[in-house]
Length: 239
Image (cartoon, rainbow, N blue to C red; front, side, top):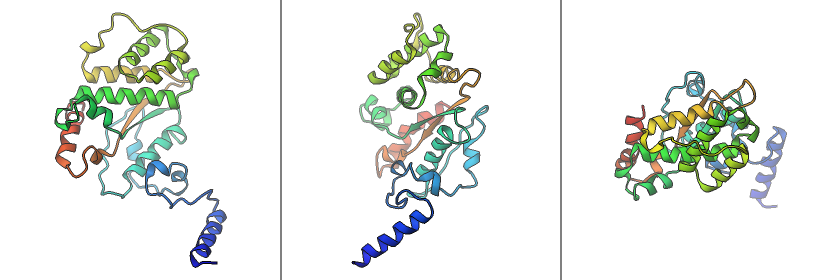
């Protein structure tokens, strides 16, 4: 038997001994390690500070070099929101893909506006609702609130999410007379969060929506100035 095969066999036995279902060190991207991260992630002292209090959420910024655990930390926050101590209290939205954002600005990071960010975040919010929120949670909405959510979806959600939402609500139509275009991006985002925090089982609605911004350096690799220009409106105008 080759030496490499012997090492793999020993590693497999060691992993089985400690209850691992697979090799948690075989991959190098946090997005591909979601199954294993909760079992092998070493909590940093600041993780609780980032999770914060859903009743009074605050912005947190994590800076570190490439490969030092920023995305892994993001995934642990998602895990805590969906399956851990914040389950049912916080809806996490991953904002780590910027193709749609840049597409709105013609591919030019310097032309990105806060309105572009709001549109991209809302699109991801509706995808997250479709993927993570039980349809029964929408029963908590009153008819007018359901109409507002349908109206927002009509303006910002992708077609699949729009269809799903209509099926989940099974009632109502988009609220009439609401001028979404006349609202500021911040006002629209706050309205969306207000509606999400009405969803949930009776008496147990979500308390907050966490927008988890990651992979900013991938907006344009090797061009930190372009990344800065693209994110500047979100950081400076939405605060």
